[in-house]
Length: 146
Image (cartoon, rainbow, N blue to C red; front, side, top):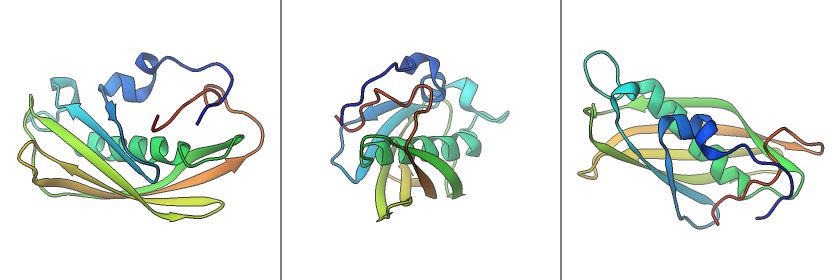
């Protein structure tokens, strides 16, 4: 999906700060991976649960953007999650998302995060509000799932 306008460089966004690497995925799904760096850990050296939730919301927003028509923009309005396994510093995690509900005004996503052994680390549900009309700084020009 192509939009015109000015983009905020990925390195200057929250996902860039975390080090998220988006992976190819078909429409209606999204995927990304992330290295568990020290800055993303809680004091005991394991991935912070807040990072898992931020990754889930970021991935769902990225996936919803690929489903939006021109002039529509997704905004996360609710995220809830369950953390199932700890992930140590230095490991990689992979997040995969699937849209469960693609309504005119809301998208509901299921996001699962796995460790390098393929074990389920975290599962989240994300709801995105789809805003129509107008523009939002940085939203124009984004391409998702390309």
